[in-house]
Image (cartoon, rainbow, N blue to C red; front, side):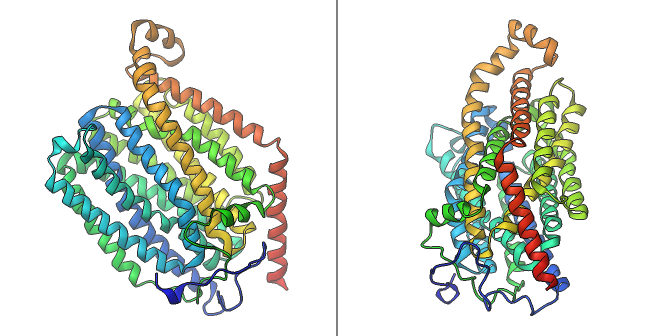
Length: 473
């Protein structure tokens, strides 16, 4: 990020679009811009796949070597917590710098961190790396985590490239494609990570991740986005513009409440983040679990493809709340019995709805927030929403490990839970999933009754009408 690519902070009206000359959409046709977006999307997908491949492998490796859900809960929670802490900065940088410049910086930084993790793995014994009481485990994990977290800056930048490159009436479809490639990421990484840890070991897994990270970086250098002649004039200040991020969110009626709802949804979702892999690894060998999770994750692709094809309807927020309610129902029932087919089917249906929820929130923000502030709004939303899941993970992992799971496996607990949840070694985790799902259903149904729902819906409709009028005029 060089100095000549930085735009000094200045006053920007709440509803000001990018200044004329900053973003020039006349340079290429919508079809040409769409092709550029697809190139950026594919490159980001490749980077996300590689990062998740190493991340999944680390989670699988730690659990298989320790058989401790606290370890996986802490690792997963730390990842989300780091994203939460860094997202305000990431959003600030996205508003202040060119999008491709930031993407290249993030790719290079991730490459360096993964290389450092390989050096640590070579120099430190496996026993020391897996000893939670020694600093090497935390250092090794933190290095990989930081590399993965910084790569996530690209996802915030990607959301703003949708606004720059895609026509307003096609943004929901583009966001659906983003969800589809994220589903592909889950499929590829869950299969490859399980096979890689089981057959190659953690060392060669790091080598593979390094190679593909380097390839994605080289490809990113070949991409161009001439529409962004310079960063849009913005009031973003410093490297952590919390005040500006908060002001940008409050400028849109009801937007803060939408973010709070998504945060609560992620708070409940942290239960699944902490316990889904342990449940699957108790049911399947690691190689098979990765494969079966990949089968379930094809639902992610189907859901994203459906949004890409049909969009989200006239009211994305309504679509989002309905999807969350159905997700809660699925989350409550997909472990009601310890049946492998039910678990995989439930994962498939649950993940098919995730792209709908994510695309709906992104589409609303892209529609109602001016481009010079979108980076900070996306970063602010990511900070809140990412912070929720690790809090749950940190809380639920030890509770499950020391109380719920032992209770469910005891003679008394098994007898009490059998009428509702059947029998099996993982009934304690199933109980947690059931409660979390019910909470999610209640929250989504109550959201329909709030004034905030009506305000955000109205803001979205007004913006859509204004953009159609401007385009026709």
